[in-house]
Length: 479
Image 1 (tube, rainbow, N blue to C red):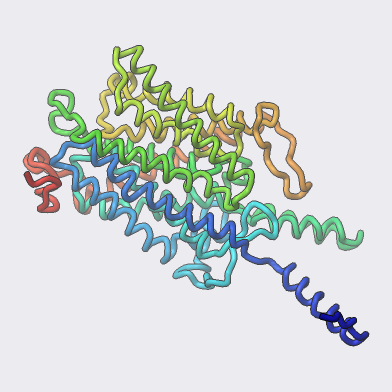
Image 2 (image 1 turned 180 degrees about the vertical axis):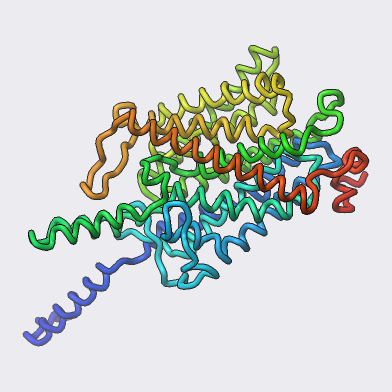
């Protein structure tokens, strides 16, 4: 075999071809590895909802209400997915104002197999349809968490009406305020334009950068951190659940009759599926299969394990026995608490967070709940709202690089920004307070509206017979 040296014309043609290939490669492209991971994460979050959450909740109620809980969770996931495609994605993840987006992507206008969504690294993109589906699963599971607070006594018609109203008026605005921003590509490009601008064009370039930086949700503009949904998902749903159980009232016989879980086996299966699926929830929120994703994965293992043991040992010391329900509940509390911190905290910080969450959530689910006498059927407030608050506030501390945290990226400077604990904690507190007020007050109004239209609660006879037969004409078990 002989090698023929290219002619001058051939070299020129080769150079043109290489230049064209390089130019094409330099254009923004979808990273197939990140895309594949995000598809996997999306399916894992669906696993959290159906069957994970459904079985976790279903096992905790009495057998006569098992199917009603499964139906409520399944319906919630389905209706929210439809709403997300029609207008939810658009008003959550487009610009408009600091509180809500617009309708430019309603009915998925402009969202095609070729359109791309930014990640947290400039020039690293995933398919927008993948991002759409990933965020859709977050929207689907959040209102599903709420129904556990008033399980076993609520009309299905009330759930069917409340969920679309709540996700539209409560979830979408909170998600927009916390998670919407212009993205690293726009910020980096605008910052480079400022650096390269001639003196007479500097002011215009800086004004453009300021405009890009201001294109974000209000909570994001405050500087609050929420990696995977401590405020958006858990505090949001947890406070709505508390408001709901207070307005709807206690179950008939609550505090006088035994209302033990009918299948802790089902609950354990559900909790295990939640833990597995939560890796999609937390690790997927990095949007890239990178080192930060590995950190989020590590923290999701460690915080959960520590929280499960913290709850179990605390229960063992106070009640004289360790219970499976306690360990499973502790695991979920740890997952909730580490959610906002998983990509910001170091592993040791995540373990501390799990320890605190396990003990404090147990305290709220037993001492506080019994003292105040409210009937939060499946401890949605005690686990999700309280755990979410612990995680949200803990994130502000554990992000500190001096404590092993990652710090916060300054895309304009191109480096990790300086950490100021007071400033960061003020931002975290404002995020928590905003979520509590928006969801708490808004949910109360929606419950009252639904009560007027269809009524919230079944009558005593229906409740005693069970919602499976009376609401759905089915039984979970025919033996």
